Image (cartoon, rainbow over all chains, first blue to last red):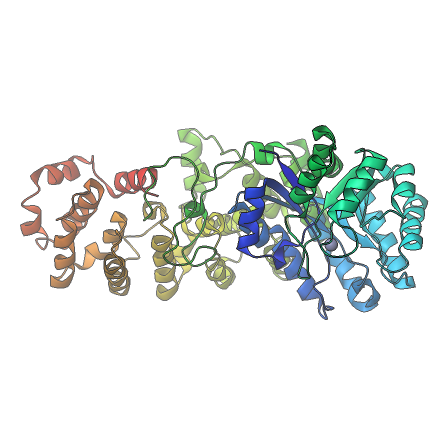
Length: 303
Length: 272
Ligand SMILES: [Zn+2]
């Protein structure tokens, strides 16, 4: 079966059904970028607990379903506009960026392209350089083209290597410039609107598979955690060569984010079998009376 | 190793929180999670250093992290400011290192709430770091919290024989809780982990003897062994009549081929 990586998905908002379906569809690893939660936080403690969840509970929860969970750390552009709070978050970040499985600084960049957003974007580019991590850039949904170009201009101003930057949420209007300038180009498959799987197929046909990365960006809104495997299937159906399919839905993400030194294919290829009995107490992911899913010896006694 | 010594030196001489935090998390880039391999002399030395310290159950990464932790200047206010932050922002393996290191930390009396709170985790790796092979809970936990920890270990099917000073901390309330738990399991048509009867053993009375009689009617070798150990080690004379029918088990207990440890190990290997 084909293996997939979803390099942009907000799993704290997803259910265990999603995890099961993702695992069945072949998703072996996920990257959860630190983002906002749909409404602005008002206390730095909320950021702290959120960041801790990304490296703690959510990673553990994913492991229970046979999925390796990585994350990126950063202050998102929307909440950068609360300057007093943003300054406190910047003080918090050094505690998290060095942790195991943190594969990038992100998602950072512009939303409304304000002065405050610019300030904290730049500060985080410097942080990424300091700790040798790639950067995941969130490009704005409004005034996208200008915002995307500006993100790249500023990154270059700070001496960043485009090969270490994933510019996300691209569309037909931005892709050429992003690829031409040497960046990785992320594409988010949105069901119903914006970038659908069909458009993605066309882009891969036109630009080839080099440095293109497909993701679901599934979160608390209308989104599809199976967008990556579904798009891969559509690409196959539309005659895109298997090797190209694998590059845009697996290999490229691995190559880009493993620049961090924190992501390795062996993390899932040599993972121990899923064993929900071993790691969980009876009252967390498994509720009373549920039979745990166990791969491996079939003579296991559920006790 | 050089990295560790350099970082330790820097943390010690500057007392810098940032240097400490960064080194503590980045230790995972330099050390893996393979278990420490210690010879008998080294084990003995560790036990002499701190009573109950069992680094043979530690991995290399957590050992390195503990080394960094112990390098941070132990001035109370600054120490707690740093270590509280560390606990509050830790990932799974950092939590493991921190909680297992409790018996090596300064200001241990002031860490009781932290340790009790840690037991509320649902991650076995973290729970184990506190509950298993760690002298801290037996030394500091009030009875109610001790009992909650042991019951949770039963619930999570953790190896009870690795909880230190269990017999010394046994108490009638815990025996009662264990019995209730066994009855709940039986009512649901499920088995009871044999090590559970160790909690009941020091307080054998009519009530507990009835339960153990039920255990001794089991067809399961390990359940029989657990029941027999509980009866054998109970207050003198109480278990005699029941045990009379199991001369082989009694002689195996007397010769040391059946112990709580052998039962616990076998249970973990074959039933969990
Ligand atoms: Zn996102």
